[in-house]
Structures are given as C-alpha cells and as structure tokens.
Image (tube, rainbow, N blue to C red):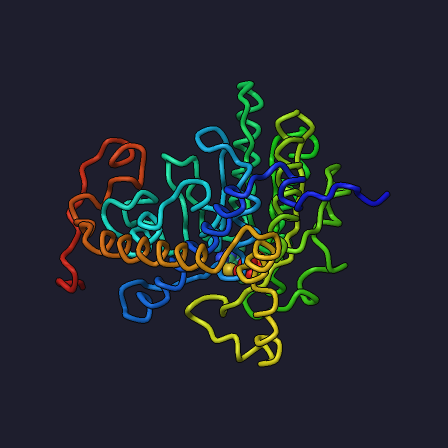
Length: 353
Ligand SMILES: Cc1ncc(C[n+]2csc(CCOP(=O)(O)OP(=O)(O)O)c2C)c(N)n1
Ligand SMILES: [Mg+2]
C-alpha cells in the first residue's frame, strides 16, 4: 500500500533538517579534502591518491547511524567520507597522506588512503583488499563474547567481494549472528575491470541469502535511501538480529588512483555520464526541493568548507616529519620483538655492498 505520509523523506526516517544539512556538509568537506589532496599529489607532496569522489553520499549516509566511541569501523582505501563521518578531521586525513611523524593513523608508516585512528575506533587497514572485512567480523565476535553493545561496520568494493575471505567473513557472521554491517560500494570497476567481468549474476547483495542475512541494494546517489538501509542494519545489529549486507551502487568519478588514466579503459561518453550520478548535486537538489538548502546557505557552507580545508592543509604541512630515531615505534607492540636492541638505520644513499 502506498504511504500516506506527506512528510519529507528525511523526516519519515527520523532525521531533522539540521541532520540532513550536516550530512550534505560532510559530503562537501570530504570532496574538498579529496580534491585538495589531488593537488598536493600533483605538487609532489603526497605519494599517490586513491579517491572517494562519487562515493561520498553512500559513505556519509551509511556511517551516520554509527555511534562514535562505541561502534567500530574497518574501512577501505576509498573511505575518506566514512572515516570523516566517524571522527577523523580534515587535518587528520591530510596529515596521514603527508606521512607526518605524528599522524593519528600510523605516525607516517601507512600508505595514503589507509585510514585509521585508535581514538576513533577506526582500525588500520592492510593493503591486500578485503582483509578488513575479516577484522570487522572479529571485532563483532569479540564484542559478542564480552557482551558489549558494539556494532562493527566494514566497507569494500565489488571487486573485493570476490575474494575468498569475504565469503569466510560473511558466512561466519551469518552463522554466529554477529553485529556487523557489510557495506559493498559497487562502483562498477575493479581498477580497469568492469562489473560484468568480476561479478557473476551482477549483484553482490544477492549473495546475502546464502549467508543467512538480508541483502539490500541501494542507489549510492540517493543519500536518504543509503541512510535508511544503514539505520535498519544498525538497529538490527543492536537488537541481536545479526549482520546485514548493503550494496550501494555508486559512481567512481576519478581514475582508480592517481597512478592510472581511466580514459584508457572507459569510453568518454561513459565518463561524461557519471556526472549525472554525482551524489553531491543529487542531494543538493533534493534538499532544495524541500526548502532546506538555500542559495545563501549553500554559499556559506562552501565558504566554510574551503576555509576549513585551507586551514587543515596549512596545519598538516607544518607538522613534524618522522625521524629515523622513531622508525621502530608503532610497528611492534614492543619496540623490538624479544627486547633486542635497535640496529641504527644506514644513512640514505650511504655505502652498500
Ligand atoms: C589481494 C589483492 N589483490 C589485488 C590488489 C590490487 N588492487 C588494489 S585495489 C584493486 C581493485 C579493487 O576493486 P574494488 O573492490 O571494486 O574497489 P574499488 O577500487 O573499485 O573501490 C585491486 C585489484 C590488492 N591490493 N590486494
Ligand atoms: Mg569497484
């Protein structure tokens, strides 16, 4: 039966005007940080960039129900907006990309795009795709054993969904009814390989039935649809009803990373058409249609975001570089496993055989 509720969609979902404006601002901020880091990469300050542009709507919306300080996130390399929604600041993100010595993710040890931060309950990720999905299930299992009220959320691409450990993780979470939210951000490509060459059947969410959990497909450009699916998944997990798999169909607006050129494997018309599904103007249009976002409001918000990114990059660049003396810190729990003595690093370019 058709809904007789005449309230705007966000109100039906229990969100106020300030919430949706906050979500829109979070998307703008993530995009602005992302764009700034491309410039810094081109200027030789950042080694490489692996962008979240086009994924922001799904990321902000699916992270929005997560409780800061209680829940846990195991993100992936495109999770810039997820990590920022869950607590990382613009300065944290840029500092990590610059590999500064006091970066919250790893003190300059990790590669760009390897989001994480102990103060935020965001675990550090490994470069082999999909390992974070097992970690999220482990966190949920640990919480269940301890009786803690914790929900773990993890994100990954549709190409990664074909890794063996994703099957293991989802099956285990289904068998043990664990409080996990699996968010597959399906952008249609795994680097240069299109969806039809990676996912048999065309849908990742359809696999959920085999793992005894609900599988939901949402339009990643529809922020409120993504939020609704995530809120329901979060509520289910908290009620002890187990995991959910959300497949958000998003667009990858950039090349896979700053190391490739998507014009080599995507038709120009396809790249041009992506803009139609950019979640930022899509959400802005919806907020405007409901009278929530005005021209003045948007202008102010964009100016604030720009100032925040300027300030964040200035502060991040001024932070100290890591030093050779602390190269062994933050690598092992003990400075040297077994309590040995640190071997001084050879000076760069010095000697050799
Ligand atoms: C185990 C493993 N295999 C291959 C790679 C190289 N690799 C990095 S990203 C990527 C594509 C993953 O595609 P998808 O999961 O769809 O995520 P997307 O980048 O599209 O968001 C690949 C193959 C890797 N990092 N780890
Ligand atoms: Mg992909």
